[in-house]
Image (cartoon, rainbow, N blue to C red; front, top):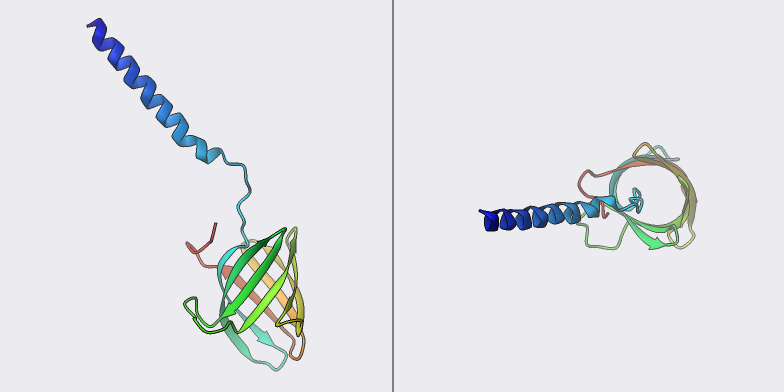
Length: 135
């Protein structure tokens, strides 16, 4: 009987260690990158055109991001537009298409709302596609 209690004690200690170690990953205090990932959006330009699009937001490090504007997420041709900029707090400022456009926007409540100026001006918004975040 004493030998069985020893074995049971070892099993309980092992199971407890597994549970504790298995839950340690949830103690990660690194903030989640809520900007990186796949997004879907729409907008209007200064000519009155309405458009829809998909975007892949790629982190470059140091709060810098590249946003690829695509017709669809599986789009294999060159992106429609390429935006690069910096996220400071919730504000993102960028240039697009090799400096042809400048713009900015704000990330709030799981929505990015922005504007651009260039040969054509416009406003847009986008939301992350659920289950599609990179992080």
